[in-house]
Length: 147
Image 1 (cartoon, rainbow, N blue to C red):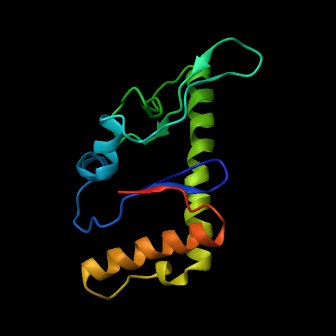
Image 2: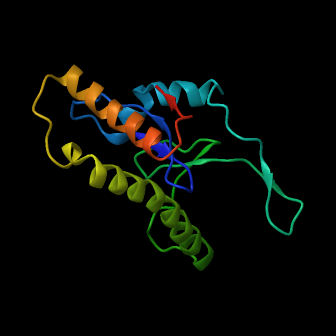
C-alpha cells in the first residue's frame, strides 16, 4: 500500500501484507493507518481553494473498502446518484489515477514487480521497499516516510 503526490512521488509506503485480507482490513492493520490516526504523518497545512477564502485540508483517497474518515475520502455509492455526486465521484477517480500511474512508472522501471516474486516473504518485502527507495532516489524524491 502506498500514497503518492501529484507528481507521482511516493510519499508513504507500507509493504508486507501477504494474506487474503481485504484492502480495508489491510489498511486498518497498517503502520500507515496508525500514523494517520495519531496525526504523525506531517501532512501539509490546509490550503485555500483558488479564488476563494475557503481552506481545505489535504486528504487521502480510498475506495469503498476503506473507512470514511476526516482525512480519507471515498466515493459516494454508485446507485442513483445526483449529478453533483456523480461529478464528485468522477473527480475523485481522477485523483486515484495518480497512484495507478505512479505504480505503472515504478513497475515499468523495476520489472521485478511485474510478476510474482518467488522468494521468502520477508525478503520479498525488502525487495519491494528497495524498489521504492531506488525509484525515489532515481527521481530525486528521497523524502518520504517508510512505514
